[in-house]
Length: 83
Image (cartoon, rainbow, N blue to C red; front, side):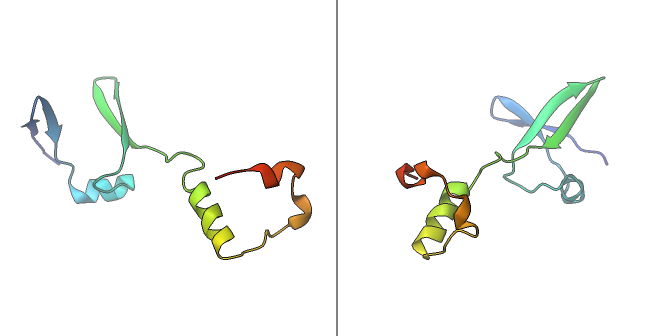
């Protein structure tokens, strides 16, 4: 697939066709990692942070009054946590 390098402000960009984005598993607005390897620019989908969204999910579960699945595995310090 042929594309062109286009000027974007003081930088340059390449339009990535939708079929290639789909193969990458990415969409407009997603973060990607770029690297230069053996004369090529490699684009990889960036993995989200491991615990992304955990705090929000915990708050939602607490607001819904959801009980822990395994309450017997609680820690003594759990009551001191703040989200």
